[in-house]
Length: 280
Image 1 (cartoon, rainbow, N blue to C red):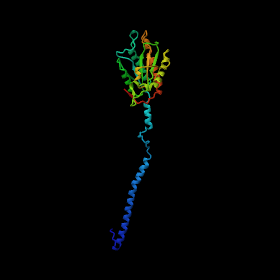
Image 2 (tube, one colour):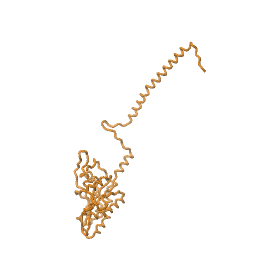
Image 3 (cartoon, helix red, strand yellow):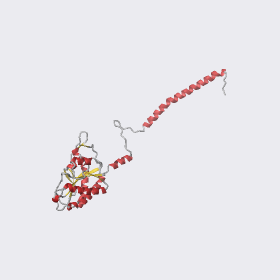
């Protein structure tokens, strides 16, 4: 239905409609001006709940609980690097009946590896056959591992037959370069304390089996250990000067068991020293 409005009433109607229009337009403008302000205030309120780093420092993500636990589990001792000494043209110590150190240590290494794997450790060898990696190559193999210890095996040309000695490297001065890296020939320095603990534990196990062996690890300057960035020891069996090679062969299983038990005892003590890295 169409609305018919008389001529006398039209001016009043137009006036009322105009007032209503102005009121409606004013209300819409007021709402439009208030909305951005309220949005900005809400954003400021929310941003005030986000932690900000101290002045002059950049923001660093903080690991969550599970991530921190995973990282901690990755820092546990899990790898043993075995270094059968000498090899190739370097025969090492030589004794009666054609006994050669480079050959005997491979047999000992096989026994030690088996005992360590039974304890749940992963074993990496610096040589698998009759080759002769350089000292730096042997250290590089060890330094490439994470969560590892290094054990080099030797057969002495001297000493009381039927005994075993453990060595750790002599003290090394802590030296770092201008960029914070540790020189290659001082890589062992941050690990000397851990090496001593490992050496004493392994020596204690060996002494229980082989009477006449020292009670604690001894210190010496050992090239294989100096450039190794991990807890590192040398185990030396006496001696190649025996009347019967079987005397040495019979020691292999006992040496292997003692080393594996010593490494297992050291596992709860294993930590990773905070270092800037090793610079060759």
